[in-house]
Amino acid sequence: MNELGALARTAGAEVVGTMTQRLPHPDSNTYLGKGRVQELSDIVRQLNCDLVIFDDELSPTQQRNLEKLLDARIVDRTALILDIFAQHARSREGILQVELAQMEYWLPRLSGQDVEFTRQAGGSRGATGGAGGAIGVRGPGETKLEIDRRRIRSRISDLKEAIEDVRKQRAIHRRQREAQAMPVVAVVGYTNAGKSTLFNTLTEAGVLAENMLFATLDPVTRYIVLPNHQEVLFTDTVGFIQKLPTKLIAAFRATLEEVVEADILLEVVDISHENAIEQSETVTEILDELDALDKPRVTALNKIDLVADPSDIDTSLYANAVPVSALKNQGLDVLLTTIAQVIADNMALVDVLIP
Ligand code: GDP
Image (cartoon, rainbow, N blue to C red):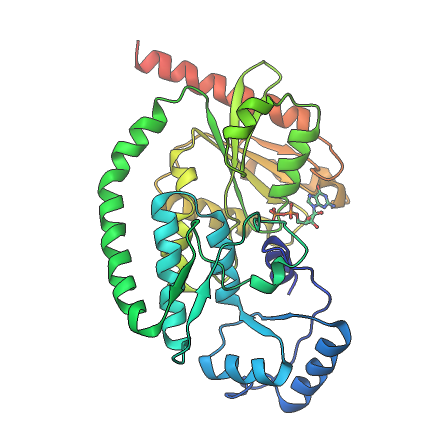
């Protein structure tokens, strides 16, 4: 539920409460039991919630019934994750893959009526104030799509074709990016590891940022000058998620294209989390699947302020590990110096290979 809360906040929702129920099986009509639905309905009314998010995939029937009973919009885990992917998708393939996953999600859920997928202007991650109302029905890209059941199937086959075309062009695109001189650092890690906090602290911590250049960057890329005056671009990626629904894996991978194109990876690990090691192993597995394992990596062991005895941490488990607290602004100078060093080492290697 903590992770779900973090995901909901990432999507721009304000979380006002959580509820769980222990049942042998989810109720086929309402997911929750009758009493729990009534209780939830009272809470929704009292707190004036416009959105209820379930940490599971709901059947179309459960979703429709709950919507009626609770008089609030109902979003399930899959729709929430797709919403976050939609906000993060920037590459052409990412946008197409997310839209495809959204169409496939909605197809069995449409009962004749039109569903409008819209992307709210400025409704990006972290946005508050009303953004919650649209969570789950925002699509990627700038276009507003009105889809009905009749047209959704042909849209799905168009999307599949377009994805094939994009794949063919991808190699060309990558060569263009490689011509860009500034090293790109992609920030990876689990949701809730502190990626956004680190991102913000790094840019606020007196690190130089040229406004002119800023304006041309997309919202998840920051221009940073390292202590050795090396200029780099930091780019945030969509957070890794536990129990990612298998249907969403293609969309997830496509939104990680920045990772494939980055020169260096900065992995953020919540070192105070009991599963920190397993989470980092999962990150490594996914990087392997993306063919990004040979990229130089620096690991920010974040939330060190929550660890009682930091000397207990086995830093040898992580590549170029630097203990930090993004929240308390601890260790970030060492982190930046380490990144500068790894870039310098890497560039020297390139010089040797290409004399
Ligand atoms: P993201 O999902 O990886 O982008 O994670 P966030 O940056 O949103 O952080 C998730 C939660 O962890 C937030 O409540 C942060 O305030 C908290 N957090 C992030 N960094 C630190 C840290 O260094 N120390 C502590 N104690 N909390 C942190």
